[in-house]
Length: 240
Length: 249
Image (cartoon, rainbow over all chains, first blue to last red; front, side, top):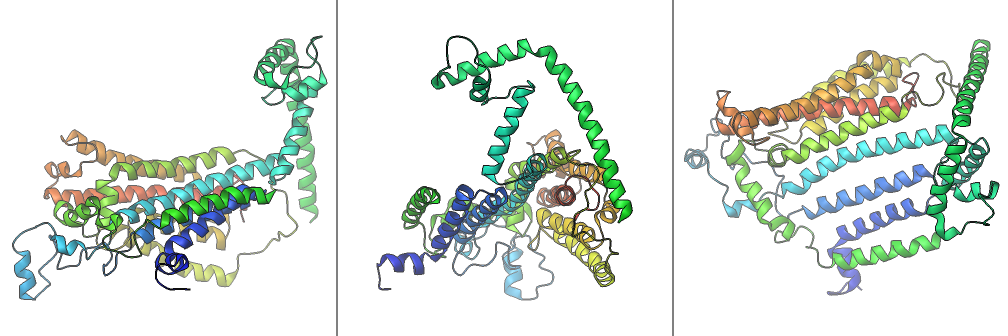
């Protein structure tokens, strides 16, 4: 099973690092596509990133090499005063010179480490931003499950239609159901974009005044509700 | 439904494994990643060009300085975006959750952390300042420094940490880091070099051109460290309290 040239031998023994990175990457990719929960999607994204980092770092491995920091005897500007061995000091007093090509092999490649160093920090930044967006979505809709979120967005759109407040995109079909535009019959689903633009213009011209009035009214209502809720909360807090 | 997602995933996996056959073997010194003229140039010339023994720092802050500057800007923008998204969102008054209890910060935890914080912060400064001669640098030192503030917020509460590092300061400090980085670059431009061409600083400071690059790299790393410290803490403070900056976890 593990003889030379076998595909399993090739993958699991000689190129195990690539096998692990591919498996991790696929786990991340599957999580991002298949999971409904937004946080689980983010976990998938993180695993994906880790797979890429692992790939770069494993490519940078060089057998028999040390970390990419000059050893004191190789450093062209190294502080040689401490080193007493005569042969080393002789070599260094010749002045700074480029590292010999046979010594280049002794150091691993610094470039992948540099790239991954910045990628990790930027990954933290993007992950924080994504979590903030998730928090905001949860505050707005009370859920971070994708399907529930879509259902809630749809129902919210219908409600906002009936209040004739703003018409974002994608609502053309719902609004068409509610109030057919004219006697021409139902608009074709193929001419979606056209109907959207029409709808927009019609509704905005119709209810421009209404919108402003109603929105201000609804804001007032919201404020009142908030006040009530706030007082309730504070009461509860006092009691406990 | 999930079976359908498996199809593209496995397809991608098969492609990647097929491509992996052509990649260099584990640790092979003759692979294109280890044998490329770019990496050989960095390894051979870093010491002559810059007097910095740590090639990773030299490549990060000098050869690829432009890239690193905008990586720092990305971190800065992420922090600002989190503040912008979460500020004034949701309920102003935190709703009491059932599992929340009013408890004093634990005595053992706070006293242990009291001893740990100075060590962590000194180590952060060490990692930042010795990024040239040993593993370390601005990003690592900044993350350590930010972690020390997060530890305060975890063991006491968020208000205690914010009393030591207010939210307005985090914005200022993060901006200051980028200004320091870009300022060194622009300063070297005024001295006749290109943007981020640190060697030109030798015209002003009494050091050799190589040593000027060494010191400019330290300045640049300090700028990166400031930004990363501030943004790490601001990310934690905003995310743990839903932008309210009270109570927290």
